Amino acid sequence: MVTTPDDVWALLHELVAAQKEAQKKAQEEAERRSQEAERWSQEAERRSQEAERRSQETERRSQETARLFQEAARERRKTDKQIKELGKQIGGLGEKFGSFTEGLALPSMERLLHERFGMEVVSPSVRVTKEGRHLELDVLAYANGPVNAAYVVEVKSHLREEAITQLRDLLRRFREFFPEHRDKRLYGILAAVDLTPALRERVLREGFYVARIQDQVFTLDVPDGFQPRVY
Image 1 (cartoon, rainbow, N blue to C red):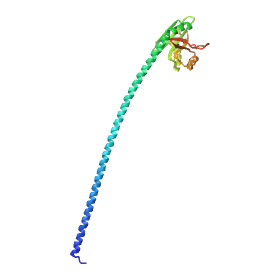
Image 2 (cartoon, rainbow, N blue to C red; image 1 turned 180 degrees about the vertical axis):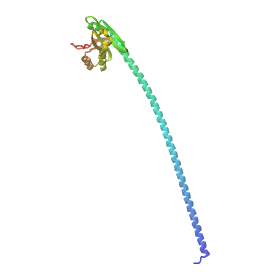
Image 3 (tube, rainbow, N blue to C red; image 1 turned 120 degrees about the vertical axis):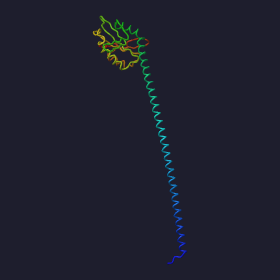
Image 4 (tube, one colour; image 1 turned 60 degrees about the horizontal axis):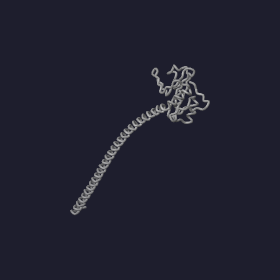
């Protein structure tokens, strides 16, 4: 087969056209990849910015949490201090009220101890220390001679169960601190401004006298035929 000049030109034309088409496709592919790379770059930048924003938000929340914890700790310390101070004030008030109650009732208490029990000595607020040990009594009354007895009076504004145990312990330790009264019969009296009927019965079952303090008057509150316990 003989190749003519027209065939050569036709072939060249096809080659040029194919080359242009290939270049066009290559350019389009390069453009597409460039756009894709740009898109990925923008997405990466967006994600980086989002990560930075979240990191800053996390840091802000962490700082806020730390601030709240510090503030809560300060408030807790402040509250603890206020509670402690209030406890001291309440404790002091209770002590003052107890002393105030004893002081108001003391004249009638002395009269009853003298007239009802024949006591010769009535001493309020007795404190004894021996060999580093301490004993404190609200009131101690005693008499020598034929009576030969002693009474320990504990005064409470509001009588509670633990007062019974406290008085029992005082009576059991009494002769350790007052050996001069070791041969005396020893009795206990619980006096209160306020006490429940149930506690009154509990005190009586323990063998203690019950006394009430009302309108500055000290009166016994025991049933007929009551037999006190001798310690």
